[in-house]
Length: 452
Ligand code: 5BU
Image (tube, rainbow, N blue to C red; front, side):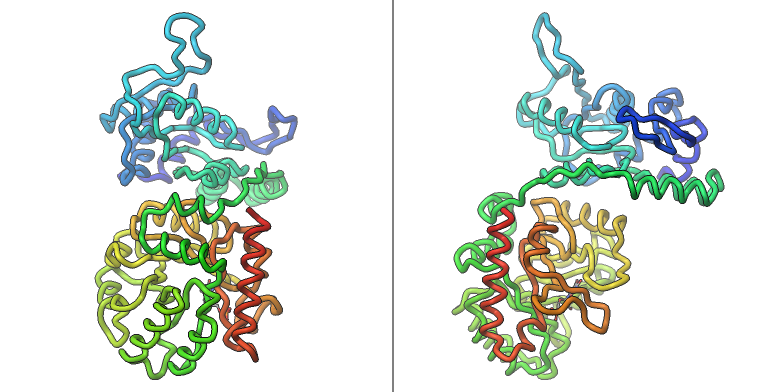
């Protein structure tokens, strides 16, 4: 396997990124300038690049490769030669004679085409290319990009449901060059400040409605969750983190009409038993909600499988949904099978969490690929095919004394486009849990409708 870092260092020597003062097209003075075209002058590097780009696509089905003109054309060609997947060529302007076709090459309608781009900035030009390729009857799902300049383009495309695979972000590049002493500390600070201050191109993409989301779902559990949400007009998941099974059953009975699911931590319950599960399932069937075990698996596949099926809790016998970290890689998630809905932890709500942008984006990429993953726990937007579950929701508190950070339903719907709010202490610690469940149900639904 080609080493990404070594590849970058060799490319740097070729002059693909320069530091100094450069006036961009927009008139902004930038401390760096990126141009990936020199890569085509090194057959060795071009071939390495094609292998790195193909590695990001190893689990994606595609029948055609298309490079966005001009810089990505040699890259797409190299990928085609390496993978033996046929290339098509997109014209910059259509010919005004002959066929007037925008795409050259042999293809048939409905084929899946991966797009290749050198650098993504705002994403606008890529969107135009996608539109043109789709107009010819091809399907675009995956886009591979060598460098993300971190100006909102990746997020724009992801919000529209595309899988965006980027080899480097500009921050990655800066970090690698700094670690190899090609950049000094003060330059790094200057560049990072520039990246921070520079306005990201913001696009206001409205969130999809539950009806629209339903159409994107393939898993029976995600469909069921959305159907329950629509029929009961609620997006509330109650997290009943209490010790006694009797208390959980009582609360389930009181609040069951106002929720889509009850989330449990089975290992908190001191008297967990098969009978408890039996009784809870009975209430869930009558009141029409699902059972969600927040186990947060985080081990190798083999151990997770044993934890899922065995032990005292036998989670696979009763849970409709489970949470799992993605820390052990995608194969560790396969062990949950296809029946249960897996919700991965892409980002945590607590102060100082290690789930940074890099981790989150890798976790989301893996989650998008897995057929048993229905969504993620996160505190920011997700690609629309994944359901977003947001804990850390409370109408009165802003934090607890142990690192939890709370937001209101309105904030998580408007800022993150969440699908389901998860409320724990806000409900089970309330004097009147039923009344509070109704309040969270109403606030959550109001926030959803307002932000559609
Ligand atoms: P709270 O009482 O509303 O803070 O409960 C939140 C629940 O969600 C609790 O069971 C946590 O374990 C769970 N949770 C969370 O708060 N933050 C996270 O990032 C994840 C789970 Br993942």
